Image 1 (spheres, helix red, strand yellow):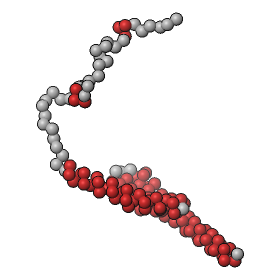
Image 2 (cartoon, helix red, strand yellow):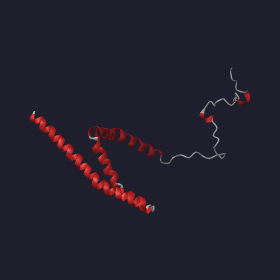
Image 3 (cartoon, helix red, strand yellow):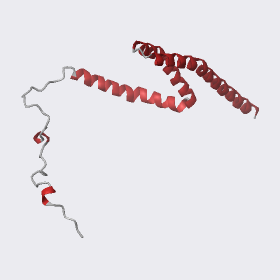
Image 4 (cartoon, helix red, strand yellow):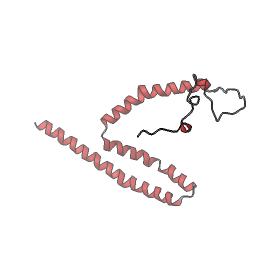
Length: 144
């Protein structure tokens, strides 16, 4: 058995005709007023800054970041990221205090204290382990 869609549910042939150009498209939310087109007075500056930022990223930052990622151990990178995150704690503290969120203020203080003491201790332990591993490898290499 073949199912047939009733003709009153099918779109009409004229509703399926697409406009030839972009300008022929009709915007149902457009205003009926004739408003002049506004130009951007900062367009030249914006284009200059975009090109500068793109060149800065492509020619300087991307190679530096790629070498940093390839050279520095992931645990050390995480530790460095945590240090910078911990450095933002005073800003988070003031922000939560000014918002009247005293629970969050207490959590920020507690997290900062724990991250500074235990987190720094964890970084120091990792550095000493890495240092002793390097000395062990150098000693083994010199003995052989």
